[in-house]
Length: 244
Image (cartoon, rainbow, N blue to C red; front, side, top):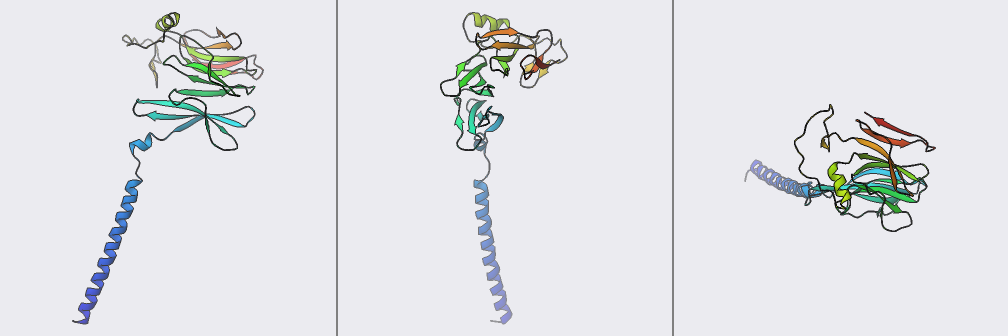
């Protein structure tokens, strides 16, 4: 066999072997990439962490983790607590009941939060730091949007939208309010729609103050406008808020 032909065969076999190894390596990498691809199921395993709240003594952080439930087609938030020095997180609320807006009492004895349990309206609930089950603090006809502790831990500011006649009737009869199909919307205001809420009616959001000892609720603001972002002054004598 001529020498040049032998070299040709040798290099052909070498290139064939290298090509086979390259293809094998690419196939292996492709399998790894395929196995590492994100799927829809992976998305629903992810949790969104928000609302970190440091306890008054600085030893603990309360926060919420929100996850999407594919079967129920809804999102649920759960409140957790973690030591600032690290360690395992502790679940403070049940996974089948959505809870949010954790807030420590200034004296450090309680952790209050918002939750709509047993298909009821969203209310303020409270956990005692030394243990025990959550206790319902408010029982209003309408849902509570947010709340803030007073500096001395004896009162709370509540933000609520005006109750509808249907909500008041359900409250008087001791039943859970169930939202029904609304009548056609009549637009008679400049701001007529917002994200996550939809079309707005004539009910407005106002500020209330709750005395924790008596559970008495007193309305502080009123009128054809919305109030929000209520905050106590450090001495508890004044309340600042925004309004449109």
